[in-house]
Length: 445
Image (cartoon, rainbow, N blue to C red; front, top):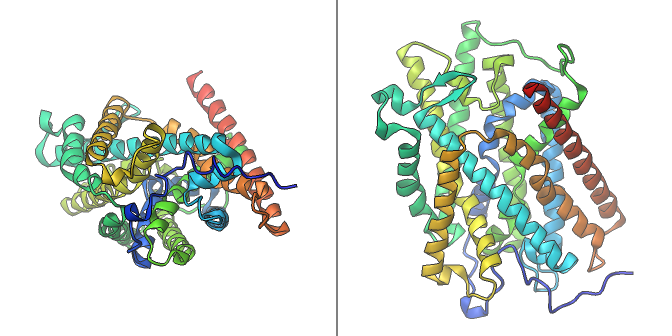
């Protein structure tokens, strides 16, 4: 027996602002290409640097297979969301769909997961940008940033000031654009920079092959040296975080001129992102082998001593930093809308209230900046985030919506697939969290 829907409570705490009357609605003007760029940008973020490290753990062949499996599961769960979106004409956001299926508890659970995930991701973006510009210290070794390499060590090119400059003069102007469609050009440049990054490191790999300096590739996992089988499961949250795009789907879809194109946009974005991850993972592992770090940019700091090599290394790091600067606004858009919906539930559309829009933008940006400066290394938090909130947003919540099936539209195949997704997410996340905790305790002792 299907649960009866309470129409009065539907979409009361939606992920994005509630549907406004026709005069306040933003007409769909975005093209398919704009949607592809925005969705792809939300995928190809900080995770791109960790993909080579996952191949180090899994080996080349299992690593590529795992990327394809993760992309397939993401495509399935996005299709689940889109099928239940706007089915009754009321639930047109992720939060609205959750409220329709599970009431206020469902939408609030989603909002909390989104805020934790996006805040963590944006803080990590600023930390990586700071590492590139002003350097970092890892295991007692000082890695200089591009600004120090060019101008030496000064107060004005320290992490706090360099990141503050980027926040004020690069990110803030983009964040003050009221519509996500306005970011499509920045997203296109971001994807172009990711492609440039792939081309440059591919060229470096070809040169290394000609010089006979490439590393030996491991096709399958190496279970020697105390390596545990359960360590393989720690890579799944990283890949899930890298490919998850669910919180971006609804704001992008809302601005599409033809909203039925959203499924095609997601599939094209997945193909593009998987191709980039394949290339970066293979080339990065080919260049650095088992010495690859969780953040591959550290390895580029350690390479060539020739002037040409130093320039290429600087270009690689800088192109990636600029890529993250342009990814930042797309993720921030969802965080800001979600926060506004939780705090100002009865207010008008956020883009129509300039004071509220600017104030919320500045407060959130300042908070992210201060945390990034105060906590310069939160990679363990990033791993646990991928095992918990990202897993809920990308896998557990969409599957639960299908299993709840308030509209009676899911087939037996859908329900079986949803059960498999939930079991996969719970098992892998549980093992990943336990393994990380065990490793952390072991390292501390």
